Image (cartoon, rainbow, N blue to C red; front, side, top):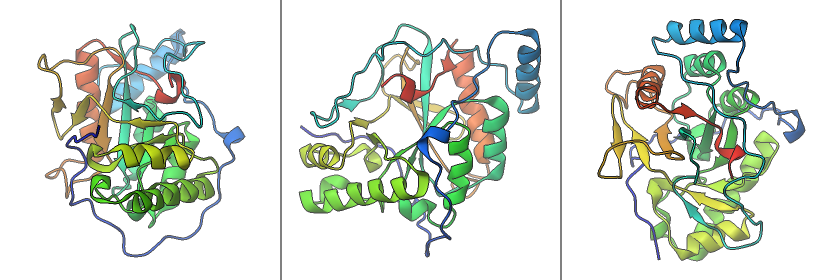
Length: 272
């Protein structure tokens, strides 16, 4: 069995030289995302932040479930996941690669307190590892998207393992904790990918149900709607890839789609 889903484009730029080493963030020091909660002061601050970015406020997400709806077993079979089985109207935002390093996106995430999960590729992030530490310090998860962004289905088992384990080791060194989740580039995987992921210490392969473009979402289902528990794919991309649109403008468009359909955003790592 294998997966083939369109996702990251082959034109994602790869930096030419690694960046300067940065200080790792120990796992224990990572904050949880400060999601908007009840209270008049918090509500007013949240509404003001959303107004700044031209977006209607999203509802506060429910408290994280006491029992995660997806149970992962380290060392067991590696499942392939595109959505989380929940009834609440929550979706999960994931952002891939790392080519664009827009400081305004960090500001936006800090002010809106929207949780995202980052699937990072070393060839895209190595010019500025510290940029993603800023997002990590806001409570956003760092996960594995391989060293060089290859189509894993074109590689043999040993080469896949080098891509996945190599990135696993790099991310642990740079960000202080080993990822639990793998997203294969382009959504392409096979059974060698699952075996390599398990041997590298990963617990799940995470795909998606929707992908954010510039203004619109691409839906996999025929009804072209969000469903509870859907995982959304976006990318660290800027005006050169988005036809003049900035990453914050693309993100605002994505949040409007989520809000207009009556959903809010929860943290993926709280659910699996």
